[in-house]
View 1 (tube, rainbow, N blue to C red):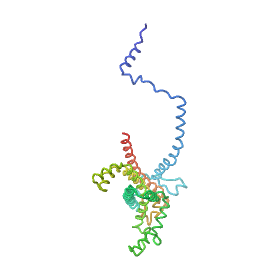
View 2: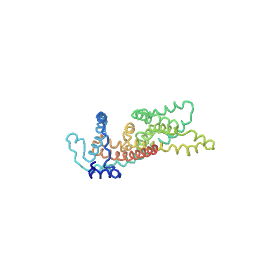
View 3: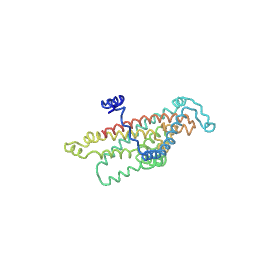
View 4: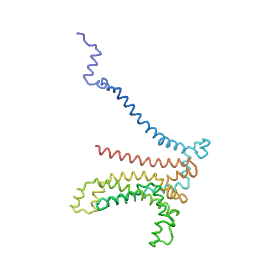
Amino acid sequence: MKSAPKQDRDDLAVVRSGKGAATFAAPSPRLPGWQRRDRRISFLFLVPALIFVLVFYVYPIAYNILMSVTRYTAKSFVTGEAPFVGLGNFQRLVNHPSFGTSVSNTIAFTLGSLFFQFTIGLAFALFFQRKFPLSGVFRALLLVPWLMPVIVSGAVWVRLLDMDYGVVNFVVRTLGLTSQPIAWLTDPHLAPISVLIANIWIGIPFNMVVLYGGLQAIPESLYEAAAIDGAGSWQRFRYISWPLLRPVSTVVLLLGLVYTLKVFDVIMAITRGGPANVSHTLNTFAYSLSFTTLDFGLGAAAGDVLMAVVLVFGLIYLRYAYGVERELTG
């Protein structure tokens, strides 16, 4: 019998030794024609979503960044001329007399909203953890501020805080706390507080619902064992409820942070950033620069600053959510 060629014998020796496993690996099976056709068709179903994202997300963000580095004004819409200024808009933004107020209002508005929304929402969640008659009805009623359109909620608070006919001033004067009506919406010191109160009222139900769901997931046997050991209400909350509720609390705070940073409609519905721009946040300040003073380049720069801040905290939330998912999946 004729012996195999030398090259074939060498290749066979390499395969037997295992060193040529990668070289002589079996080719991946070719998909049947109908599977390749179905895969191409499935990609076609993604095209509408891709077009939507490109048109309504990617394009506006890219165009806003482009506007922020050009001197884009109302005249630019007619002539198409928008000279490139680089970081000049950001320099003008920092030197704007209302920029510092907008930044400080954004910080105070965000921290105040988060603290009171979370604290009051947690208190309501703990309250409704106890079963009592009509508890479901009361929980449903507390969801009304969250379910109402924000414009409607803003209109309600404008009526409540009206200087002459508002319910709040009527109650304050009836209790004898003041003899003069309080200008909640026109006083430079009270207007930011009025907007903050309205936003807290709107955000409490969301915190309550999520935290209440987290409390319901805690096994009742832990509370029963703690009660047998003589633990009081505060001790059960401190050593059982709060530690087990911490992951849910972190998610609520991060989501609330991102949402509050971009709040727009509440402020515009109640004060429109006034009086004299004292209740502007970065969000409404960017809108005012673009559509009131018609300095679109400067407004785009303010929008870029806000977008960068929101993006940072959004990435923090996504990183945290990814870490929690890895822990749950092992």
